[in-house]
Length: 140
Image (cartoon, rainbow, N blue to C red; front, side, top):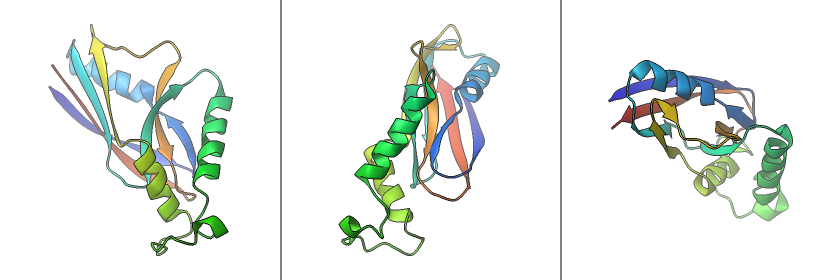
């Protein structure tokens, strides 16, 4: 069993791939088979496994979520009461609730069993830069 915390600096909304960091941790752990748990310690960003070959996928996902959950000053979001941290804060919480903050990925022979075009992403939902903490845990 092995545990590590990593940090990802974001520059605003978008998807930030960190598959290499997870694979490096797994390789250094010496654990050969089990389940990798990836957990983000925040409520206004999330984790997704998504295509890492074509950047238009990431752009389209970002655009879709912006249309699905617009900023709180949009007329369609008048119902929102949590507004203390800016117009992007409550929408960020909603986006995180629609996705996930924890992902389990099986691995074998010390390698993640991701598909050919799959990558692990932090999905930042806030406009301003943040430093996000992610916990990695692998065990049999």
